[in-house]
Image 1 (cartoon, rainbow, N blue to C red):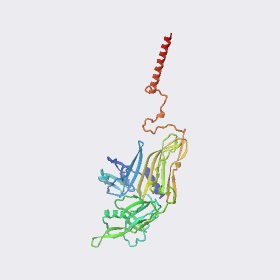
Image 2: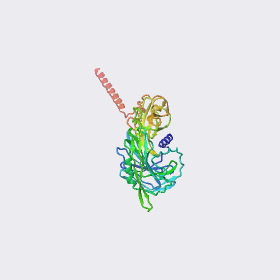
Image 3: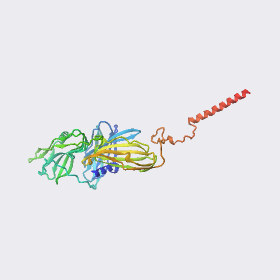
Length: 467
């Protein structure tokens, strides 16, 4: 798990982010983009749109693409500071997995956002063979005892990856049909567009925060149960965060499929899933219970340089990534002090699916201006408290970077360099002794000089008259 978090953190640090191409922009400031058009079989192609954040989420529809399998949709929220104003943007990204190598001709596509249709002209995606990355061996999925694997028949299953999560800890529900690889039954789906949404409503737990994988079509996977190979048709997947200790019971549900009979007629076949019981565990009594994320997290950070002079501008970037509910991270900005000044340039919160889990990413860019010389450990300023589910206690991620500052102190020295075009910008750099005749102070001196001459002339007249 820790290695996965490090990989994903570097992914969102920009090492593996695909390039995008701007396709269109609407009056609502909806921007549609495509991902890189030259990828490998281990990479993913993407379509995305960005829209100004509002209380109501947008309605959208991404198209199917021949030659690609439709995967999940990621969601991110970014805040940037423009002209001293906070501008918030929502971005939705649909990922597509290529079926194989080759040049894939993609026809005219349409992305629909809030009843607006954005057309994407035909293009070609070049897919080259990729090197499969070595992955950790997944744990054996526990099958309920009620499921008989010896009869070599398909079965329907709703399962959770965690049976006893802490309150606030993520657990992922999946609803899938499993068909043995050597199965001889001729099966087909029966109006999944109607029955799957109805089944989802029956299994969706209450008193939980939900992050949905947004599977719009069944996801086909190859899995193994007790040494036997199965094809999994996954219809639903979502991650939930329990809000209290009340037991969560997923009732049994039935999936209807069609089986071809001896007379080649299609007969209905009902497959039932067993009930699922999830019992959340209480958190330790603490002032932070329910106020910080619960899960597993890692930190990736960088500074553009770690040795600086007083007054330099240093850019500090960090990514806090994990499987906990990232909306609970404290959004308070770091306060400046006598030694260092901080200015938040941008902030982003994203939620995205990876493998069988939902992850959250908190990314900020901070400008640091040192005021005093010295050696400063950033852990005194940047730290994030969360509940560590592996240690069953509250834990803290701390910055490991150290900033070394040289030069003379800037004790309350006037600095208007951040005025961004204001009337006071760089005023402290002006020479107050420089004389220019177009300044009002110079005209005042001239008037004073004239008055002195006049006073002297009047005094001369009085002196002469007295004789």
